[in-house]
Image (cartoon, rainbow, N blue to C red; front, side):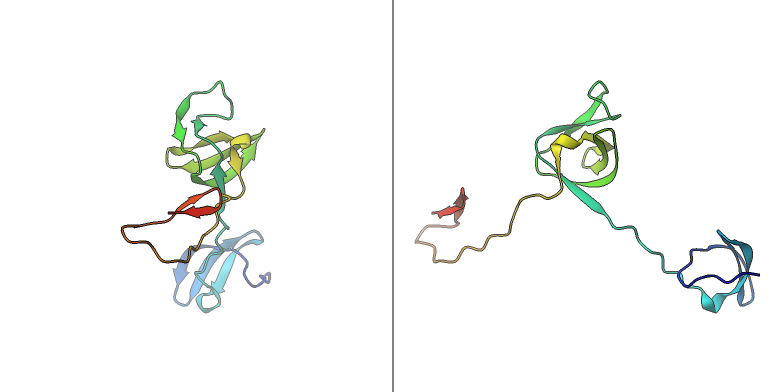
Length: 133
């Protein structure tokens, strides 16, 4: 007999009435269903942004085939790193991009422009931090 800590992860194997037969790192056994929660802890998602139009490679090497070009500024889901390369999920699939072409942030900031548009003007354009008509 053993005691599990709160939030211990268990694998439910079968049910009998109000009891669940579960498997844990400590072993297997019966536990009351009312003491279990179906909520799973989610792994936080990490993102990276491409710093250029960059090849998505089948393996972590420039000698491997390109599966396509991921556009500059695209947010990709970071999975893991190996030998200077990151495995990512992108619009072109899930494979490898060299770390030199990935940034931890997108360096884009929201901008609010206040003012009145002139007659016939439909938008403001930002040029190197300045607004122009």
